Length: 371
Ligand code: CP3
Image 1: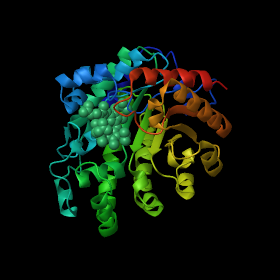
Image 2: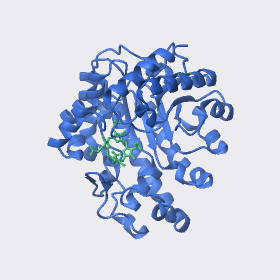
Image 3: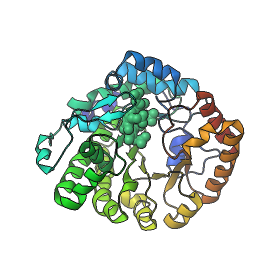
């Protein structure tokens, strides 16, 4: 539907393009900064809304998703990007699975995929416009309400991370059920990963046509795989997503968008090299977790890819002095590493962080990231 109507959408002019410039490889005068899980989680204004509305209801109601997306933008004037309020688990829902968000426990699938015979439950030919059109409506509304203050980032989960939830039925310490699939049922695993990837690609294209200006793919559990399984199962699925997104946009003469890959825990030099040539992978930026040194990663991957990250989310509990010292230290590393840099945490904001400490972190980035 959006393939025909996107040209008619008109949005306010962008005032702060620092984020898009860094994603384009520019060494910006100061680093753009945003925080994974900035929408929701720690903000009292989010918790107040959540008391009144169920989690997925917030995702499904464009007015609510819009309000939550804008909460950190209204609160923190130093923030350089907004991220859509939604969840990666809307793709399993679109494929036909039920997902609940339990208080304290997180996501739960009443009927996870126990073995490959359950693949027939999934809707292979899902129409993303019909199932997730509410996300596209939210995005268009957000772009208007943002009024050009900062760019809007769209996102999806990565195939392996989503497969893990669909099989485990929720979070896991060992991922033994999902990983067993890779060892026992390689062909069916591949089929599932590609089915998810294809839906993710359609979802991201729809997000861009609705107004998302950048994209991120969240592979939170990539580091649970051996380098071999990351490279042979997950990487082809990740490449299917980026290639389909770039291809579809080109096919309808839509300007291309930059995609960031957050492959948390992927540290093996060979794996890092395989995800670091944007001309091959279609991912312009790697979002690094806090367990790597950006200077060392730069030596391994070369100069083509941009970095995002990689502050330990726990520094937000370190008090003003602790935050400032750590921001100063890590800024020096990224300056030394060179290339485009988007300052961020190495994973999401944790639930008990004080909003003022998030604000202070942003101030410190503003101060110490100046080149
Ligand atoms: O970054 C943002 O603020 C945008 C919105 C966003 C949410 N989830 C909202 C959310 C994004 C980008 C996500 C991504 C997501 N969701 C990931 C990948 C990134 C990561 O943090 O690892 C994953 C693994 C999920 C799945 C998920 N959703 C889990 C495991 C949980 C439960 C526990 C938790 O971590 O809070 C959620 C719930 C969720 N998604 C909340 C929010 C604001 C809190 C739920 C609540 O209000 O009850």
